Image (spheres, rainbow, N blue to C red):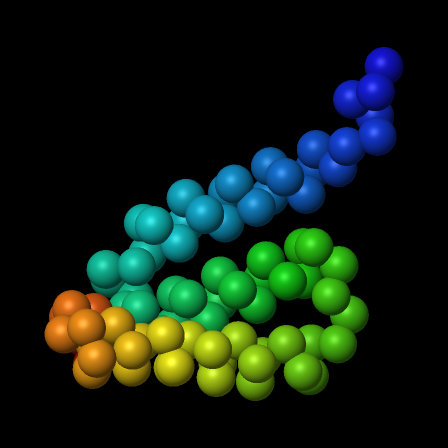
Length: 83
């Protein structure tokens, strides 16, 4: 009876986004797949200000990519393999 209190639809959509992110990470590249995942996840969770969401997720993704690649030295393919 308390199952109705949870947002099952949003949870399933987020799980689907996580699976899609994992599958697209290598062919699409880290930057595009992460920006897409974070932006779509924010929209699913109810964020209305998409004009702020896109730049913030882009900046966060670039900073994370730089820290992992530049500071830690772990290679992440930033762009799709065909570019």
